[in-house]
Length: 112
Length: 112
Image (cartoon, rainbow over all chains, first blue to last red; front, side, top):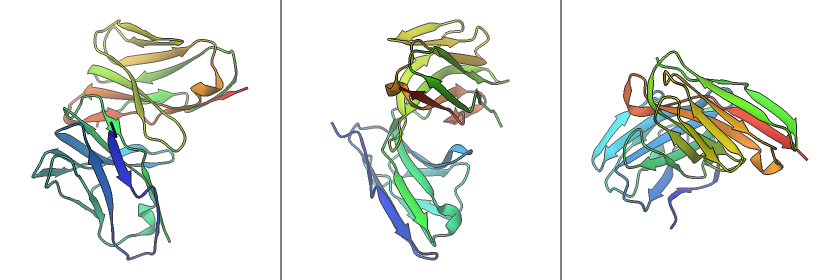
């Protein structure tokens, strides 16, 4: 059972580049979310989805887009990367928004 | 904004010592979840406490939910190097119905 799979594990970008962080889950969870984790800031919610076709903004959505075309996949797009987006990004899934979360192992993103 | 304050922020101890970390809030939560995050990985759920005054044990880890459901503690007996990691608490409720409220965590290092 793979759980939540994130790719890539590491990425280095130049300012202004765009990219997509992939997230897939095989547990048939309706709720999926993206967090960024920065030293001293904890986990901050970027975007979330309560089901296929439904997405909404979290605490820090600026500079990021998401879509949810299937239950399994929830990609996060950086539109024009900025150094302030250097962080570790985690995708999570669960049956309900406030239920136990299953996290992926993260994508470590550096923007130069 | 409902906050969960975790203390201490950092804790470094020797193998075999006992320790307690805390998760406090001015808000009432329906339940609290505790996660452990090891270096380079995503958070993994340890336990959920639901009832005020509830105590749950997971081997050498003891979790307690405050009577008023505003605080929780995690006590580790005879800590081992394998206990090293970031311990996060997360609350359900507290005024939000679309996401968990995460604390910033306690970073525990257990030295051999």
